[in-house]
Amino acid sequence: MSVIDIKNASFAYDKQMILENINLHVEEKDFLAIIGPNGGGKSTLLKLILGMIKPKTGSVSVLGKAPSKSLTHIGYVPQNTNVNTDFPIKVIEVVMMGHVGGKRPLFGYGKDEVLCAMGALAQVGMEEYAHSKIGALSGGQRQRVMIARALCAHPQILILDEPTSSIDISGQKEIYDLIKILNKSITIIVVSHDISVILEYANKAAHINKTLSYHDISDKQKTFHTHGDDEHFCEVELLQMLGSEACDTCEPETAPKWRVKK
Amino acid sequence: MIEALQFEFMQHALLAGLLVSFAAGIIGSLIVVNRMVFLAGGIAHTSYGGIGLAVYFGLPIFLGASIFAVGAALLIAALTLKKRHRIDTFIGLIWAVGMAIGVIFVDLTPGYNVDLMSYLFGSILAVSSEDLYFMAALLAIILIVITFWYRDILAVSYDSEYAALRDVNVKLFYTLILILSALTVVIAIKVVGLILVIAMLTIPVYIAEKLSSSLFSMMFLSGAIATLFTLVGLWFSFTYDLTSGASIIMVSAVSLGLFLLLHKGK
Image 1: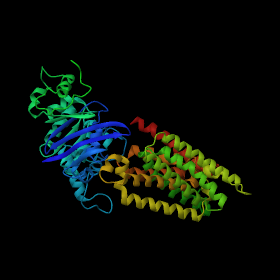
Image 2 (image 1 turned 90 degrees about the vertical axis):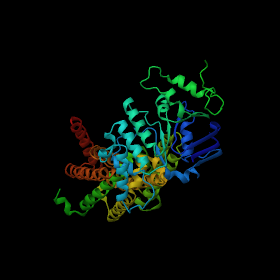
Image 3 (image 1 turned 90 degrees about the horizontal axis):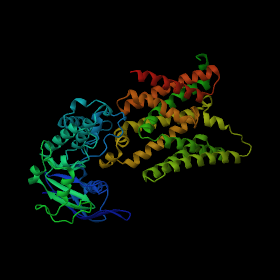
Image 4 (image 1 turned 60 degrees about the vertical axis):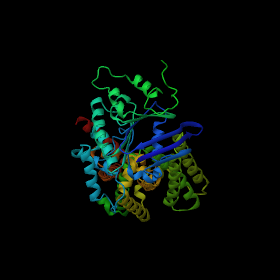
């Protein structure tokens, strides 16, 4: 079953074309990595999927409905979770922000909401920090809390925007290992700069630079394996491989403009 | 000071100090965590335009100032929500134009020589019973809003983008926070005046923020700290015959300095 279906979608801010003729199908329990250069349109694509903006042409459907109708089934972990760290808020309060639906008490939070939030925190291994101030956590711990907030809504799709951009290397691996476990039951979409890490975990990759090139890399994970391997690829090589039309399992697409000439 | 309490104006001053300090603590917390301090400053100064209009048309001062301040809050909310460039320039403009309107209308009022200083720096010893009702009503409204919509206000303040994705009406709550700020500024004009009000909205909050782990505790701790500063400031004002608003702010500022010194040592 296809959970996200984007057909011939284009988007422009004023006259500046950001996304052109995008086609993307995400299947249930996919782990899709969205990569590409800065300003290439990655965040805009996420906004389309989240229904925050509408495509100028073409269509976007999530779980067979308009994105804004499916919002309650999408968990979203935004970029830059390190902003606002002085804010006086407890971890559990952050997580409960993610709660949707159900009965809402007259004031405060319901018992079921607290239980649900504690469950989500347990899923990411952060339940002992429930009553800590968010600012007292490390970057990696805070990222886990944001994932818990997204999980609080019991999503079918989890979207993460640059989840490890401000975390040290060992923390990054922990976050991806966690996402990989979640992927057993949830469809995952991750936007990242860090293509070598992401390709180790993802089974699909979409490279976006105005246009989209799509790659099924589920059988290529060994080739792309980059950790603990002497003959690992550097990022430029990986980008070249993904941008190349010679890749036999890939759908034919026009080569992106950034491609490095050999 | 105890013997001074037999005077009605002194009882009014204390009651006004309590009501305004508590409102300022709660709303000041929202202003600080939403990084709206400059916006609140703009609203405070713009409200002088309302004072001038009220004097000219013979309306109650609170009414004129409230209408003008809420108007400024709506305008600033609309400008900010549209994320227009140069928003700081616009707020600076509204700030100055509001004051200019106030000064000109006071000039135009025949035979009325209004004491400008009392609005700029407060006149807590001239609080009437009507003023107290207005202050109490506003504090009641603030408490009701905080009680029923705490989670929405928290979500919008902490992460407005995410709140929007969870169906919270971000624009409504953002505007509501600005309107409540505008009204709080108006009642604080009596106590500390519209120039000093920013210090009252931020100094207790800054101290409370360091000591609180939730927005809720921060709001009430700020209210308590602001009340303490107001009472001590009033005592200084009464004992040494100083301007009340300035005394309150100086007590707050010195306390903040001491707090920062002690807190750094930890």
